[in-house]
View 1 (tube, rainbow, N blue to C red):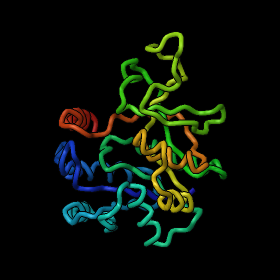
View 2: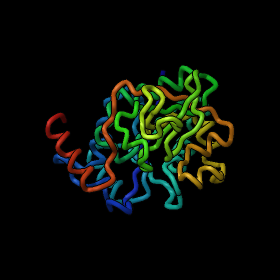
View 3: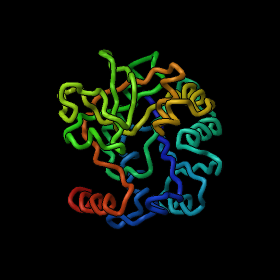
View 4: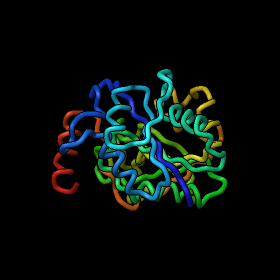
Length: 249
């Protein structure tokens, strides 16, 4: 199986400006993401950006850089431009690794690509982890996912799903899943998704994956073989990542 990784990276960030280039254990955060991606089985790893500062830093650690339009509203749109510009085939698999995931395990990147490859009818694959903290059930920044018995996504939400009617604040083992924000796409499905307008549910929940579900696209979900640590969105997240990388680079 052959797949590619694209790391969409932008400079602007409302909560942590310039976070892709913030120093983390002696390297820009984006370099850690790139190195983790290169340690996967990906045939290519591309940094996709619209900012020359990110492009210059990425070239400094020998990354393959694709300059993209400044008008993209999401990483999905940016990756779709890279796929089109580079002429990738409809059936090719591309994995979206977020530029703020310096602790992403390479085995998880491989897993999501293999999951999509194993299901010929699926458009997208993604991962989940069991919710272990009951407080996260009510936390809107922790996205939850519900699946059918075959592992197809039924719905993603910032609200508690499934809702435990008899004990609303209690976790049900195996039923409550936290979505892990890594995606594998077939290029044809990526192109279709990027061409669709934002959907009704997507705009309500502010979750782009709901656009795919509303359009009837199949999203396969599996439990991550290694639990990824949280992405970096705040100064506190950055400090936690720094401590983790100092202990285990």
